[in-house]
Length: 400
Ligand SMILES: *Cc1c(COP(=O)(O)O)cnc(C)c1O
Image (tube, rainbow, N blue to C red):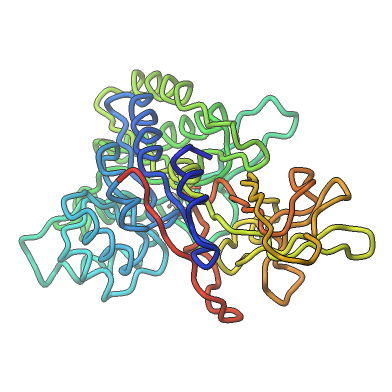
């Protein structure tokens, strides 16, 4: 944890826990380092679904070129939080109302997911004959990570509700180019693909090369200029090793080489998790420690209804302990003595586990504070807050 987070959490009253604490100075620094590692012709968009808190969006504004939104709700929210920022609008199942709102908002790029969506978009635009929008076709391509493993992991190219199969993408290109009926108000700028998540830099590069290679061949076949390729997000975040970071320098160098082979092309990436995961902490305190059939359990204030990440991913959320030495009560202070403990929340379900059999919990005492780290992405905003009606956490933004 950073010094400012440590001091801040130590000063909170017990009733102010649990709390989400964000270090926005650290976030700005991290995002600036990511930006600096990327070549000029790579645009950095932030996938808002990872963490759409307004102060987080605003803190990123200096380092990102824009934001990727995937619903009408995100569109309105991000527009209000960072009014001047370019937006890319993606996601399956866009409703006619969302499409109209996004046209009115002047969305910068449309990630079109299906043939019907092209028609829906064209139908809305027909009401405004002077409006022209920029389109990337989202494709679902079979690619491999190129790892030296005997079995290269196939990404994309499998049945999903996302994007267009390669043959349907060809059909969309025909609708948009030449004498195609939809080309007047829809300008085809290139291709979008988000095919994998959790890939290290070498594998991400292998995937990006295949997406660009396929897109260049598509453009060549149909004779349209390939201006842009968005190769998606999914840069690895390693919850088992909180100190590890995606190798942005190697990734940036690799993208520069790729761009060298495609003059005139702009690349775009849209990471979420790898930008914000490290800037957030979920801070709480130990309410009770109990031995259950030979194993220690530490029950903390809050739980997976606030921080669902470990439950959805099936991992142990990394944490640090902030010891609290004062113990004002006349009864014995329960503590972990078996060398490890499972950190559970207050919910009446065995699924409410934040960290399982964690050795870092040895010696943990009731009233000690625990800060779950890497809680800045897919944390509060994916959690089932209403379940069991416990109070909501506080939200604190440091370094603003
Ligand atoms: C979720 C998503 C992202 C971000 O993925 P991360 O794993 O958070 O980097 C980017 N693009 C699209 C289309 C997505 O759905």
